[in-house]
Each structure stands twice: as structure tokens, then as C-alpha cells.
Length: 223
Image 1 (cartoon, rainbow, N blue to C red):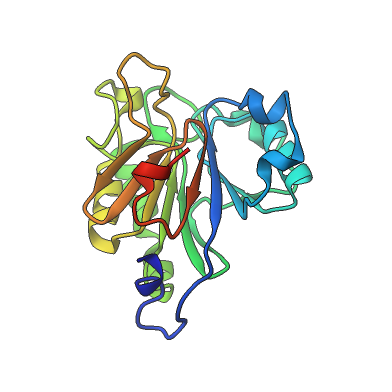
Image 2: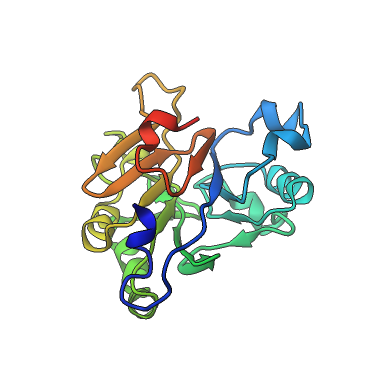
């Protein structure tokens, strides 16, 4: 169970259950074009894994009354001029929500000039700068990125190749979940919604899906 492992060693005890809406890459017509507040009933937190219209995030935070966290995708240059209002950027930090430690690392593999793209070395440098936060928070429970991890549901072309350092994070800290975007499930490569690596449940957040944080079998219930 998740709650037996979260915050182990620091005396915080069990956490409450949490239902999370994770989104990425394509705005959901189900939510944006045909919105009804009841569609978000029971959702405790919304997490964006990038490449979404900032106005979409502003829309969700305004009408849902729950926090919206986000990292940048490689196509999110527009956020510099039109940031998602009322939302929380979690880039390069461990954000704690109701006791759950959420680490954010946006961007993709660098394949052309532009923002929110990184070489493997540059992404590893970002992770290295998090050493004190990781030590002080005793790790993290959810990894939120735009790009996937290397050879874990990524693509073989450079733009969609994942980062090796993300695998290293999973191997060292064993988070409960890893949410990412970037590899659209509409692509012909048949990218999966769910995967698992060691102790970590990996979820491709393409468009939208709902996760129960304390679910021990999310593959059977993910929607």
C-alpha cells in the first residue's frame, strides 16, 4: 500500500486518499468543449504534464476549485507571455500537496533550438541541483515530467526519446507513480497508457486520465 511507504522514517504516518486528474498534449473536448462541473466531481488535484494551451489550465483551475500543477512541454514557449493563471508551476522542485511529495521536471530531449529542451547532460544537471530537496524531503512519491524515461514507453527518434536520468530517479527513490506526456497515444507506435518499472506505476497522461493514488492495481482501474 502507498501509505505504508510515504514519508517513511519521518513520523508523518498515513496519508488520505487522493484522486488525481492527469492531462497532457491534447486538450480534452470532453472537459473543455462540453464542460460540466460534475465531470470533475471527486477530483482532488489536477496535474499537467505539458504541451497544453495555458488557457485550458486556467479554465480548469477556475471551474474545478482544486489546485492545478504543471510542468512545461517542449511546445510551451507561449507560457512566457500567457502563463496559466492561478496554476502552480512545479519545475525543478518538490511540491508537497496534502503530504504527497511531487517532483516536477518538464521539457523534452533537445532536437532543435528552442526553450524547454535539454540534452541528457543538461537534464542530469537539473536533477543534480535537486540533491538538497531530495535529501530534505526524503525522496518523492510522484515524478511528473513531459518526456518519458529512456526505453520506458519512449520513441526511438530523438525528439521523443526519453531521459536516462529519469530511470535513475525511479531506481533510487522508488516513487509510487511516474506521470509523463509527450508520446501521444494517437501516434502509430502504439504507445501505452500504463507501464510499470520496478515499484513505480508509469502513466502516459495523453489527453486525460484519472488515478486513485492509493490504488495497488491502477492498470485495472485507470480511466
